[in-house]
Length: 468
Ligand code: ADP
Ligand code: MG
Image (tube, rainbow, N blue to C red; front, side):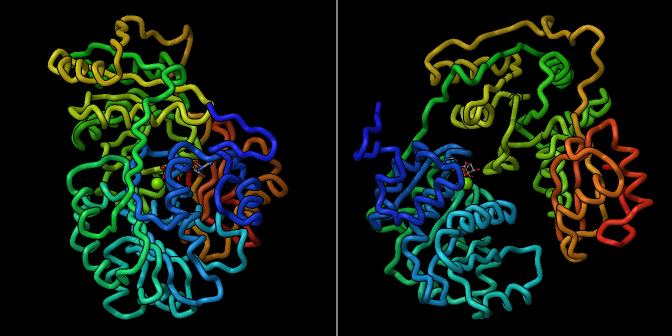
């Protein structure tokens, strides 16, 4: 389509945008070679100061689509909050903060602060007093700070509503409205959403000025995502998930159910079959939720089971398969679920289990995709000869002690390799949280590594370690 020739950047090159050489160099250093489709469609408008409504699927690069414009609107020498990003949950706010920090590296000393519930107010208030240019947070907590006047928005020039559909689902409409009361009328407002329900239209109508709409409900590159349907009955549906996993043996699978009860039942069935499966649901407290996501991301949990609401917006890389345990009544939701796999250049599987009662829903999916689904018989699902139940390659060890004890990933890696003699290749991801550190190790060394760590030291101190 667009071809780059010397001197004239292609439409998808970041260099076609009004960005400084320092910003362009930083993008290159982050490995951002060209814009994603949503970035190519939205950045020219957003950098020209327009209000924007952007709809694109999870993982399409929406964060940079608002982070670059809000950074362009900043005056780093002015010590006041000039940009505010509202997000539905703490972990999304943290992901957004990280991404803004990475993109802000081109400029000196841009301070980005996360303000979300779950943490105490006082340290947040102290950080605000030290000055921040950009604040990323959840509507409730932002409102708390505005009420206490520890945060003011007088200097705000960019307001971002990220995951607007999800914030509405979570009942934040009124909080958002009140936060916006505190913001100057003269500002740029950018709204991002994976879906486009009526509530989002109303938000836009109330708070945006002549917004431009950028929608990319692109169909997936079907070659990369291989979709297969299996007919099931209610009595063999959950068992069929285990058959799929043992037959195709994906390392990481996201399994979608329509209800929380179905999620719970599926986890119980899979665990009974010896498969490591964890449920992600809204009732988990923040620490348990972090723990589940860490185990899934570090490849020590084979299957993450979730409802659509619980899984929305999470940036989960390396997903070999998605399983639609139930067929969703909403065709757009189906497209979103399936689009979670086969990111980048990776191929991915999308399996769907459908009962006779769900055939109408499948018909609508076929219509939307413009082709007939590919059906396979359950009887074809046999594990490779001699295979054990699917096991994840890694096991997570939890070390009681984290940032508060000043533990860094290097300390844990050092203890396991230099002190205890394990090979660096046997150690996976290391996540340091406030009170805990999680380290993924190869399954075969998990018990020995756990015992040796318990007997040894991390950063010169004895630690308590357990296998999750
Ligand atoms: P979304 O908000 O649409 O779900 P994210 O902004 O979280 O998507 O981006 C998904 C991933 O893609 C992130 O890891 C991000 O760093 C990466 N990414 C974004 N834009 C680009 C780009 N132009 N080139 C390469 N990687 C990108
Ligand atoms: Mg996002």
